[in-house]
Length: 164
Length: 120
Image (cartoon, rainbow over the protein chains, first blue to last red):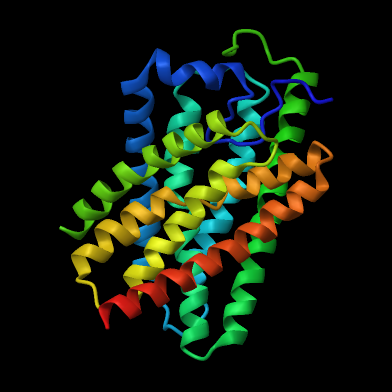
């Protein structure tokens, strides 16, 4: 059996005691923080998409890059949050808000569907697979690399007078 | 103006993802992340419908880029899949990743077809 604290969902996992109580304890702060993070993430995504537009039959490189980058960062972020004590609004802001708002699944699905409709089924299939593989490799890499850095930092005592 | 509309849509979409995820989990205790699948399918359905009709740029920014974009997520989906794999729940991990892709594409196609039919 896995411990009850084992988190699967980084947005909110009701198996995690801290997640269960956070909304009732600070509803305005939690939802406001998520909204603020979501705005920043969505605007950054829109900026990238506007800078690198694609034709209906073309490969949506901007959205691919946004989604893979966001997956790398959520892996790194959650590796930190599951090993170190942080403020109660860090996960809602950076994880739920910024990275949740930055990455998008709806544009992924609809861009693939549009490519099929436009007669570019091959591009659609390549895009579907490339995002799936890229996202999973990126989250694994972000988690593994950050976990290794954190473990190394724990083994090596920090010089006196520094931070923690 | 576009920036404000995207911001407004995202300010609603991101908290709605969190609240929906909580509501689904509260009603349905399961190791499978049904909450994230719910928002991703719903957002794909809605965006598919918007893509089917000649929507104004303002609607696309507010509802499409802002709301649907922030409501749905790849970062949450990929992290869940990683954690399910770590937990030894391989079948759940595969079902989450592939099931989301198939359901999302299906929802986008359905939203597109329904909106086309309604728009005549």
